Image (cartoon, rainbow, N blue to C red; front, side, top):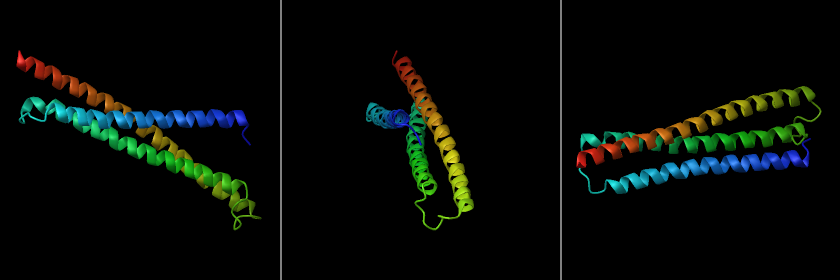
Length: 148
């Protein structure tokens, strides 16, 4: 069983990861809202293609953030179920060590898959946010150039 110090470090890590994901989620949503206010009175033109790309990337970042949170929650739930299985909280498995082992291995596999997927989604979430920001800056520079 984990020590109290290990549990505290895990809690802090989990809280930090959650805050980071929610920060990126909020940043993507805010970026979409801000960019829409910048073009509220503009007519459509080809010079706005980088802005459209930015909106697409920010939308993808927002979507990936939501998917990331779903996989993290799924991982946490599977971890909870693993603890229940290994602590004998499933009466139908008690007295059957092979069934407990098989259930534990299956749950551990699910945890690894969910965790790996959440990790990849988190990386792509950040990449899409940055790519959207670069696209927005390109659009802004084009708009400035067209005004001169």
